[in-house]
Length: 86
Image (cartoon, rainbow, N blue to C red; front, side):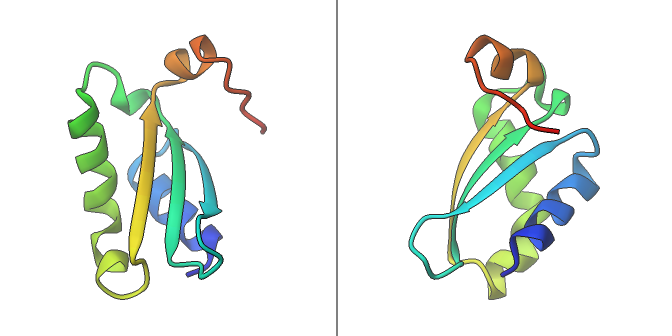
């Protein structure tokens, strides 16, 4: 699956999201996702992950074999020293 497609799917559902996609295995179907969105504020980690998995569920049926998620708000990303490129 094309990484831009994954980004677009996520950004369609989480409109303020900063999304980084990387390939964990070289096969382009095991993805490592960093998703930063203020729509995650006040939600438990499991709820954040459920939000993302709901967006990706159709792709997971056909094109994506596995995902590793890291989700957080912009404030949490800043606290963790994560630099967000524009």
